Amino acid sequence: MSTQDAELPAAPKVPGPSPHLLIVRAPYYRAVIDGLTLGAERILREAGATYEVLDVAGSYELPQVIRIAVRGNKRFDGFVALGCIIRGETDHYDFICRATMEGMMSVSLQFGLAVGTGLLTCDNLAQAEARSGQDGHNKGAEAAAAALLQINAARHLGAA
Image 1 (spheres, rainbow, N blue to C red):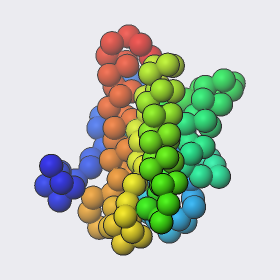
Image 2: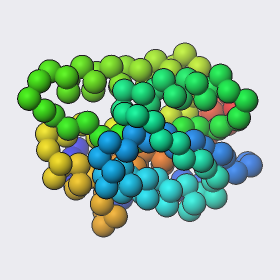
Image 3: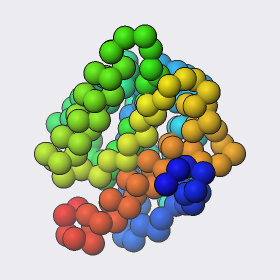
């Protein structure tokens, strides 16, 4: 299914206390990440969630900082990771994409975390801009909705 075929992201209802999330973002492509952040924040506000925003150096650091947050003394019900990697002329793109996504899955599985991943992996800036705009399918909004649904699942299963 392509993005064009998918329903627009909507805020799921979250029973129980308002969830508190950490949005971790890698603002290398500032306008794109700001767009993803606006989409994520909209969904979280609509769901009645609270959140904090933390910037990191790049997408590669997203899973590392989520792991640091788990070790810290602040409590988060879930995480939204936002980043953008655009293909260049070397294999660096493939390495960073793979390592970042494997890191996100690893930290999520290892610690049983609710993580919504809004990591754009695009061939060019135009593709990234199309996925971070406020006029339709915003991958930041989709990541926030995914994190909220995972929080719902954790609460339903008694794991939260």
